[in-house]
Image 1 (cartoon, one colour):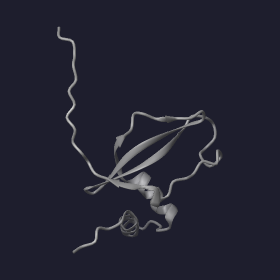
Image 2 (cartoon, helix red, strand yellow):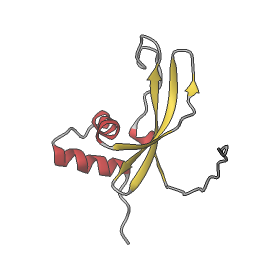
Image 3 (cartoon, helix red, strand yellow):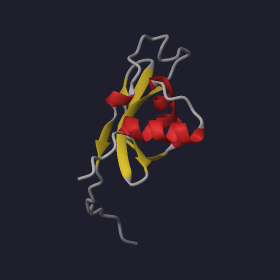
Image 4 (cartoon, one colour):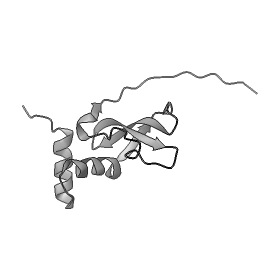
Length: 107
């Protein structure tokens, strides 16, 4: 039985193949910058100087959810002493199809 690769293993493999670093910060940067974001939560967690948004990133046929800070002021996340996410904070998620019915006015 084959063991599924962890996200960290996937990123180390990707970074090694592309000549990027394999330290934790390099892996997180690759995750955020190199793969397609397929969903962004329209409902932000709103704070005075920043918002938090959940996003889903696709790597191959797998999906991973993480959050990003959207800064609304002049400072960066580190200046505000916000927790900086790491690879271990990212969760694998699975798509689930849901049918939605909407109603519109007829003309």
